[in-house]
Length: 251
Ligand SMILES: [Zn+2]
Image (cartoon, rainbow, N blue to C red; front, side):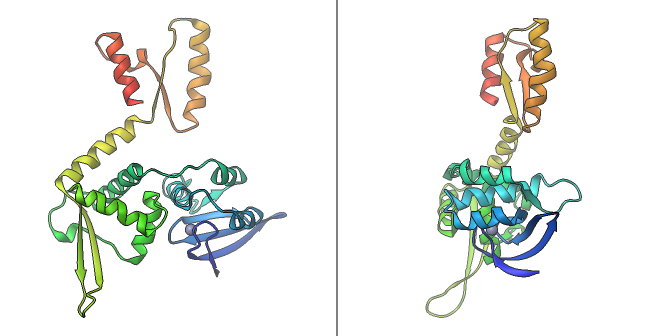
């Protein structure tokens, strides 16, 4: 195990080396991005590039590390395909998305509604770095912009304990959700469930089209992690146009 800067976010990380045939790999344990494996040639190229958004790439890696790691695998594998996506296809996350990501994270971490100050999340230096990637913020200044916005909107609570001395430096920070924050959290959980749905507008009862839809399209969409639905599958009583409008809105 050696110490090296993460090629994505430049935080000092633990690195271990492995090889498979002629290919060499490094596994980074980065405080910000999470744990990921990358082929050494891609890593060298990556560290010489200026990324469009460090925040978006670090967020992408952490999300995949935490949610999509296969059982028994403790790192996210940055294949060459993923590497190209990182370089060319990832756009900056918007401040609104960053705010939603922070609310979702806090809700999941705290699990139950706020009861006392002990139910708040300790928010030390390491947590600050991690929160940059959880939200998709570029840096700490970006993170505090989001925190201030949510605090002013009475969505989150931020408690700061200052130390002694003239400068009274901030020694401890804690984050929590307000009553409104928990409501927003529940709304976000609902929409993130629904937004996995992709709505298909098409003609029904044509055997050829039905076969194509059921045996090819549905599977292809499923492989992307989304669910393709047709209006006749949602089965809700009501005027067809209203159903259609409701389903499109959710998709
Ligand atoms: Zn990193």
